[in-house]
Image (cartoon, rainbow, N blue to C red; front, side, top):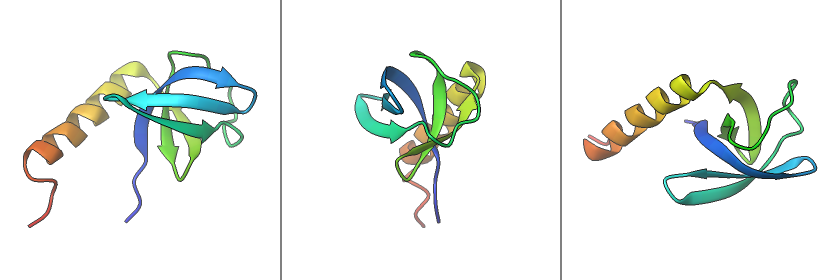
Length: 77
């Protein structure tokens, strides 16, 4: 199973962004995005690539769901 993780862009250098969520930072390529993004925007990260831009509410709702899954044992039976 593959997951896309919502992260917030902290900085941009060319086609690379430093993204963060809950203190975890990752570098992600912006090459697959059709629309420009800026620092502070939320993007969906998969395999080192930003694959779509998310509005803040959608990102926060998805992050809350991930946090709940982890709090409930990570979805492992």
